[in-house]
Each structure stands twice: as C-alpha cells, then as structure tokens.
Length: 458
Image (cartoon, rainbow, N blue to C red; front, side, top):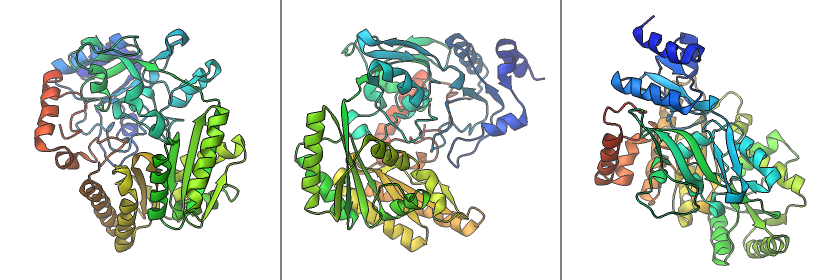
C-alpha cells in the first residue's frame, strides 16, 4: 500500500478506494471525455474535505470534484488522474428557513428531492435541468445549470445567497450571508457559480426559494418551419408576455417522442413550440389565450392543454428527449457533442437551419430541441459507435455547430458547461485578454493548479 493510500485510509477508512473496477466507474461523466483517477474519496463533512485539499495541495495531487456525474462536457472527468472527490454522500437538507425564504443544503442533494421537500411548504427551487431526477445542487452551482424555466426564473446563480467553500489549501470560507441582497465587497458567491470546481469545493449552499405558482397553463403550437416558429416567439415577448417556459421541438424530435408514446399529445407535422405561463389563475388564463391568439396568425395548429395531467405528461416526454433518440434507429447511439449552443433569440431559426445543413451534408441525423425562449438549442447527433468514419463525421459536425454559434454572436455552452470538451473554443468566444483574467484568478486561489486541472482552458 502506498503512503498516499495509507494517509487517505487513516482519515476516510472504507470511504477511499484505489480498486481498478471502482476507478473505472469514475473515469468520466456523461460525456466522451475520459480520465482515470488514482483514488476515489467520499467525504462526509466539510472538515474532511478541508483535510483532503490541504493534503493534496502539499503533495501536488490533482482533485476532481464530482456530484452525480451527469455533466456533458467532461467537467467531472479526472483527466490528470489524482483524486476524484465524490460529494454525493454530503446530501443533507440542513435547514428549510421559511421565515427568511431560503433553504440550506449540502452539495449532494438531488434537485428533485429538494423540490419534493419544499413543496409542502408552498415553495420550490426553480432551476430545472433535464437531469433533475439525478443531478446534485453542487453540480448545478458549479455549472450554473438552468433548464426549461430559465426564461422567466433565471439560472442557478440567481438563487445563490451564500456558499461554504473549501479552497485548494484547505481554508474554509463563506461567500455570502442570509440576507436576500448585499452590496458588500466582491460577489464571491457568483465567482464560484460556473467555475466547475476549478476554484474551490462547495460544501454547503444557502439558496433562495420561490413561491409555487397557483396556476399553470400550457399552449402547444405547431409551425411549418423553425423560422416561422421563431417569429412567433418574438411576437409573444413583444406583447409583454414572459412565459415560464418556452421550448422548441423540431418535427423529427416530435416523431421520436410519438414512437416512444403514441398517446403523448404533441403534434408531429411541424416544428412545435411549447409555451407555459404560470402565476394566478386569472393571469395565466388570460396570457394563455393571448399566446394562442398571437400564434394562430402564423401556426399550423394551436391548442391549450386540457388538464394538469396532460401538461405533466408532455413535460415528462420533453425531459426524455435525449433518451428517446434511440427509437429513431436502435443500432445507433447518441453522442453528446455540440449539444448546448446558444445564440441571441432572433438567431435561433438561423441556427436551426444551419444545423440542418450540417446534418444533411455529413449524413448524420440530428434532433433539435431546447430553450428557444433564451436562445439555447440542444442538438442530438447520433451514430453507429462501431464505425470510425461516423466518429470522424460526428466530430466535424460538432465543431461546425460550435463555430456556427460563435459566428452568430453566441456561446458554445448555455448551461452544460465548458469542462474539457469545449475548452478549445473558449479563447475565441471570450478573447485572450479576458481569458488571461480568468487564469489570473485561478493562479491566485489555486497556485498549484490541483483543483480540476485541464478544464475551462485554464
């Protein structure tokens, strides 16, 4: 047994492993980025995390924090080896503080479980990624996750009040407080949001809660093409309506959903926009009718969902899109590349058309769906993973999709993060001078570069 393993076992006991089988389980997240850790460590409290980072800093051992491993950019893949720090065991809801409109949680709390705990109190945590049944709050903070509700409610960073963070040298800091707003000093809380574990390890978070809306309405609209659908979305916003969700499903996506469940109430003869509004009963009823009236001028069909049951079924189907693609051709597999680009809202139709051209030219089928209300498009490309030529085409398609988004003034990641998978595009998107500022911050907080090295082009 190595001296490092002896030291780790003395503190963590059976919660540290160096077995090859277990290390393979932590070699990657849900992306294609691979690494291989030397050790897997599962802490139970902040003091253990502090000890580990101090030890790893002294011995120059890389540390890759990990939540549920649902990331799609290699953010939790240990590309430099070292320790994978599995934070999923720190999963307590520490306090639901109704009087101060906030909840305090450990980073391993799963998003859906948090909302189940908040619901009886009449509150919820709005960020709603497609992986909400699995992803952890720590991972959501580290990637500034969002999802379908972000068009109205914003992203994870909008709900952060305070973080407990362990720095690379083992120091423990708090970045905020229980107050709902503050202008005291640098906004360190948001500095760690989206940092993907490169600046510190989050061990506790104070989050704002939002009151559950009394009513929700869903309007299903179907258009001849994406350009017409995009114009309708802009018309809705121009009318002063902010939907709680505004999703696009191209006709191929709708057909795939129908093949999974013929009863799902989604049209499959055009490009679909799902508009959801929430609030008081009277306001949601009025806004749903307004949206329907606006869209009827350009749509093939418009319908307001009949019941909460129907709404829930449609949203459940929407969350399964990534898995449903296998029904298109069971011999092929979806590969997560080029799937999270974002552009100004008015450019979404152009981006969809460009993706269609890329897909057709390279002969790689692509489902297109996502959060059109904030300009975020997800592209589901899939290939026969046993075919080397298709892998080459896939990489080329992903590269062209990323560069198309940048040419339209967009981003290579709206919510999934940069990790290693998209790091090559960051200098082009941000500019070298801006990237140097990021690198200066990294050097100041983690001079030995032990925290999630090889990510974010740092």
